[in-house]
Image 1 (tube, one colour):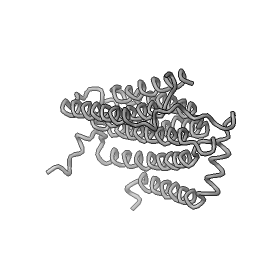
Image 2 (image 1 turned 90 degrees about the vertical axis):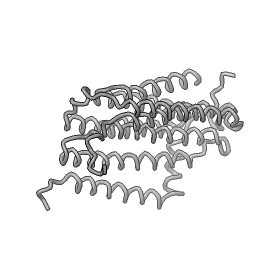
Image 3 (image 1 turned 135 degrees about the vertical axis):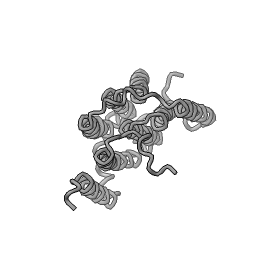
Image 4 (image 1 turned 45 degrees about the horizontal axis):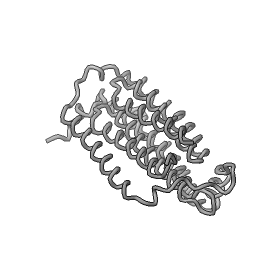
Length: 107
Length: 167
């Protein structure tokens, strides 16, 4: 009964995703919002690895899932670099990283 | 293995919550590092040692250094004085609670997810070799696309952070 099942991992990953989603909605600092995006992305990675481990093929984990996680981490790293460059450019232009101060599209 | 799962997931979720709850961006960033370390522990409890190490190297190492560097560059102290947006806090918390409740309800009926972890054929982990072989034999095109993506991201970052007067 104490065995860890796939559902445990899926639940933990879902909780992490929910924390990230809450952060994106609640926080007003662009950098923190960006960090919460990373949390959500990592939660998705955890799901992929969990499915890879529990969906064994010939007694080995299904490594296609781990390759996909490898690609996801690469894309996330590129995304962080570009996103932070955009935030820095924004900070240079407006001297703020608070979403409430960025309301020039508001009617 | 059971203890490792509970410890790693507790660390990951507790420090993930600290990312959202901390008012100071530097504390948030450092909490995110610890959260990622917990996540790497979870990856290793799933016998994905390669992905766990990559997670530590890329996220806890490179990405978080980038975050801390940007925070240092902007000198974000004013944030502490801001007051919270109450409707956003209520809405965000409600959405998260609803999401987790729905997930629990779905997982309760998910029979394939209730089996214990299947045993591996070999006792030792060979995942670095297996992932590497798969990457270069089955997905060679994809890894080249990744290279192009990283190159274009580098060029994009340089173009974005160039001084305005250069044009």
